[in-house]
Image: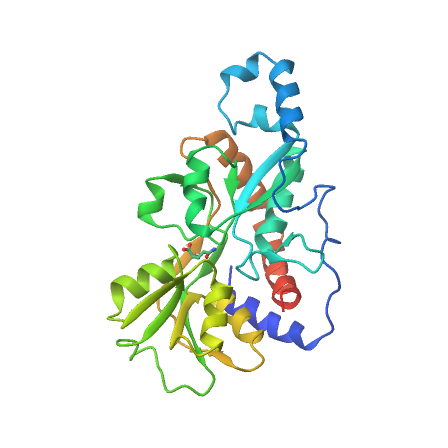
Length: 289
Ligand code: GLN
């Protein structure tokens, strides 16, 4: 999608009144809730008893998901507008809306498990979640560990600084730079800059708070989270205009789970062709503020 266009729309919308509470979208009855294990054990027990065929299918297969009546998505709920905790205390954001549509198309409920970004790939490999929608950039080293869907958003790394700072993207060497641990911002700060120090935080929101508190010179993070963090800083922070990288986001599944990947791609392609992803971005840039 065209982020420049999306962001222009966002700015226009930001001038307008809030669109109101989230959740009133086109989505199904599926509910987005923080991680909860309740009901999972009884459902798992009954699904085991219900079908002997299922015993031969892999965890995370469509048959298992449909029998359980739910699909489990893991993400890090501190990456607005893609994922954040909404005003009702539940997970909200572009990736949550997409995940609800995936669940709806499969006829199951969505369960969201919130975790640190750096644990997501291992959780997928261990079968603790069926998929992850986490603004995750497709990278060759990640492709060795998980399979990725169709790419649904293009992004880039940007630099957030204190408002009025003299820092430019050409003079990042020698600075104390904050990043979210194990993200592409971390990889860039570590490999491409001679930073004085790279400070790794559990979330981009935490890194932004440290910058606003004067503990860092700059934060390197994805484009829309950068805009969202700056917009929520009471004028303390601003985003430098130049992009450092070019990236694309995709949904990740356990390696080899082609059946689930095909289902996810079908939903993504529908949402892309209906223009829904642009709508979700515009809506959540406003609501996450
Ligand atoms: N796009 C970045 C990455 O994949 C950051 C994702 C995130 O922090 N949720 O590393």
